[in-house]
Length: 70
Image 1 (cartoon, helix red, strand yellow):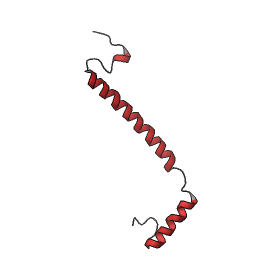
Image 2: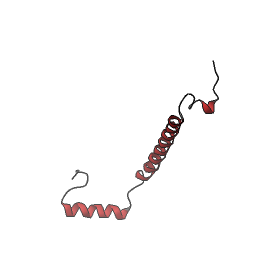
Image 3: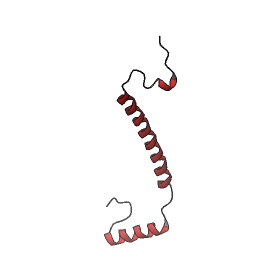
Image 4: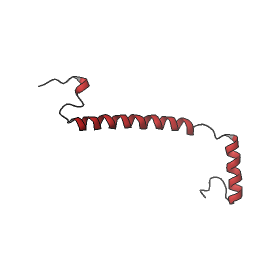
């Protein structure tokens, strides 16, 4: 059995384009993970008071209640 060094294990027996596609897929997965973490941090922050006031005014103008989905 032929031993494959760990740094070449992912690309052993694959064409160059397949290996680069795998690398691209791993990179995109990492970028997605980083973006999810960033947006989670942003969405977990409280709404700024000025924005909350603006949202309340919009609900008044539109004639609907906050949270009713309209």
